[in-house]
Image (cartoon, rainbow, N blue to C red; front, side, top):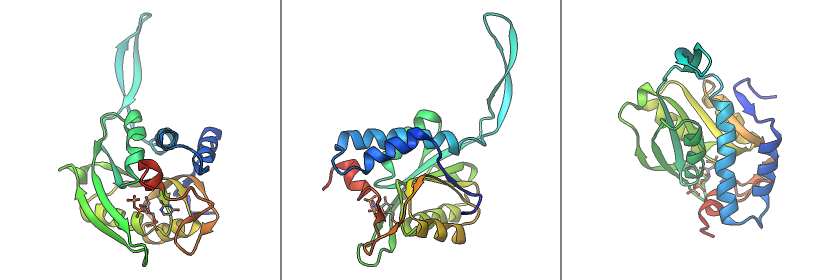
Length: 211
Ligand code: PRP
Ligand code: URA
């Protein structure tokens, strides 16, 4: 049992779609489309606490006071490259969100993350943030991305991933206990190369067809 800030999806559509992308024979086209769809479904959960206000409308029947989003400023931040695969799914749910990019790669020997690019909206410190990346493995990349956003003044940060390893969740809960984590599933463990088992392989390579 993890902290109450760890939200593991409990939905048959997410489970079904994840099973398809785990299959090594799934095509790049299908993989990419399913990543986007799962991103959309997890966004549904990750935005559950968005504040509402009310507005007046006139339906064909009568005037009514109805709920509407309170207009909170929102940004989605993909960790490049693989995080790009989730942006479209978030934007389909929250079309007015701004997008900031953070480029990060894992050194294949040391597994340490390195930031190589960071471009954020000017008012990023005033926005609620969802950092997106398909994979939370050692947690090094996500922890560094969260630290980067905090150093830019961001306070309300969530992380959305498709698959997480227990090791990555434990690292984040320890280093960033204020961050909610939304994940499609939690897998068994990491292998000696830092890959999630059973996992889905290298998410970036499968989204972009680079292997
Ligand atoms: C993958 C993945 C995460 C990171 C997870 O990216 O998309 O960013 O590894 O691993 P960690 O939790 O151990 O840090 P990768 O470094 O392979 O880069 P890519 O997105 O360019 O493929
Ligand atoms: N990055 C990936 O793309 N896949 C893993 O299993 C671990 C890190």
